[in-house]
Image 1: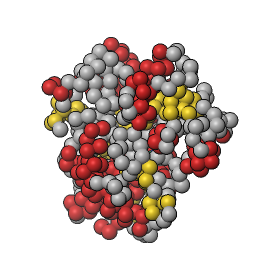
Image 2: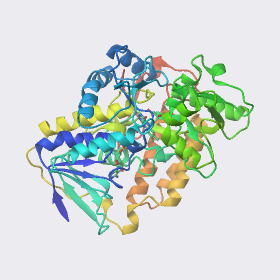
Image 3: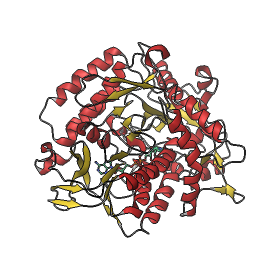
Image 4: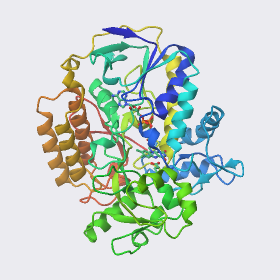
Length: 517
Ligand code: FAD
Ligand code: SIN
C-alpha cells in the first residue's frame, strides 16, 4: 500500500520535533516514530543544554571549549553555526513555553566538565529533556498539518535516481510494511547506544537511521567515536540509569573501593576532566582494584540542596535504597553518545538528495572526536531547525515514487531485531569495541560480526549487525588514540596521519579517509 505526504520526519526527539515545526509552513508533515512520541534519548536528558546567554560568557569561549573537546576533528564552520545560532533558537524555545530553572528570576546556569563557564540551562533540576519534549510537542500541536504516527518503525529509505523519495515502515495496526512517499525526508532517529551491553540509552536507540542511510548509499562519518559516560548507576540487574555529570559539576567526587579519591592522580582537572578521560580513569581504577564499580560521593554537600537539585536521580536511586545525599552511589561507565553518523553539511543535507539528517543520527562535525557535555541537545535544536528550513526551500514540487527496496518484504517476525542477535552483538561491542580497543580485539570483533552477518537475518537485525561492523571497521582503521577513541596499541594522538574524518559508504570495502579539520 502506498501513501503520500509532503515531508517525512523520522523520530520525535529534539531534532525531529524542531524539524517538524520548521517544515510546518510548507506543507503536510508526517512524523513517524518508533514508540510513543515522548520516547527518545531527549526525554531522558538530565544535565541540560549548553548555550551562551549568561553575562560572563561569550560565543568565542563556547566555540573554543567545543573545539578543545573535539580533539582536532571539529568542523569549525559547524561549531560556529552551533554556538552562534544557539542563543536565538533557545530564546525562541523559551518563548514557546520551555521553562528552564531560574534563580531570582534570572536563568540559572550550571557547569559541566570541560566548559570554561557555567552555561548549562536545566529544567526541574535534572529533568531537562522531558521539559524540552513537552514544550516542543506543545508547539508542534499548534500546527494542524503536523501528524504523528507513533509506534511506526521505519525500515528503509526509498531512493529513486539518487533522490530520497520516501520510506517504508511497519504500520502499527496491521503490522504490514507500508511505503510512504514525500518531497523530502528529515532523519532524526538519534543514537546507537544500544549497540553496547551497558548503555544509558533507552531501547529505541538502536542506530536505525545510520544503518538505513548506509544501506541506501549515504556517506557515514566518524563511527569509531563513541562516548562513554563515566557515571551510570552500577547495580546488578538495574538499568544503567545516568547519574548526571552535573552532580560532579556541583561538587561530587569519585572514590575507589578503598575510599580513595583517585581522579586527581589521572588528571589535574580531576572529576571535571573531559568525559573520555574520566571514563578511562574509572575503567583503569576498576581494573587496578579488581572491582565492578567506583563510587560517586555527594555526602559532603548540603543534603537538601543535593536532593532538590537532582530530584529525578534522587527518586530513582531511592528505589534501590540509595539516598544520594547520604550514601555512596555505585557507578561505572556506559555507552552514552554516538559522535559519528550520517555525514551532513550545516543545513542537514546528506550525500543523498532529498535526505536531511539532524541530531544524534547525524555527523555535522560539531563534536569532532569527543562531544562537549550538553552540546547535543543544542545540536538537535539548531540543526533540526536548519534541516527543516532547508528542506522547505529545496524540496521539489513533486517526486516520482519508486518501489520499496526488495529486502523489505518478509513475515511479521521480520520487523524486530532478533533478541539473540542483539545480545550477541552487544557483548561483542562492549568487550571488544569498548572504552579500550586494540587491533587484536577489533579483528576478533569483526570476525564474530561477519559470522553473524552471514546468517539469514531480517532487515532490522541486518541493520544492527551492519552498524556494529561499521563502528569496528572505523575503529580498526584509526591507528591512534583521539578523543573518545582509545587504542591500547596506539595510545598517542597522531596528527600527522589521522587528523581526518573516517568516511564509510556502501560498496567501498574499507573506511575512506575524509577531509581534515
Ligand atoms: P532522540 O532524542 O534519541 O530521538 C530519536 C527518535 O527517533 C526517537 O523518537 C526514536 O523513537 C525515533 N526512532 C529511532 N529509530 C526509529 C525508526 N526506525 N523509525 C521511527 N522512529 C525511530 N545531551 C545533552 O545535550 N544534555 C544532557 O543533559 C543529556 N543528557 C542525556 C542523558 C541520557 C540518559 C541520555 C541517553 C542522553 C543524554 N544526552 C544529553 C544526549 C541527548 O539526549 C541526545 O543526544 C539527544 O537528545 C538526541 O536527540 P535526537 O533528536 O537526535 O534523538
Ligand atoms: C549528563 O547529564 O551527564 C549528560 C549530559 C550530556 O550527555 O551532555
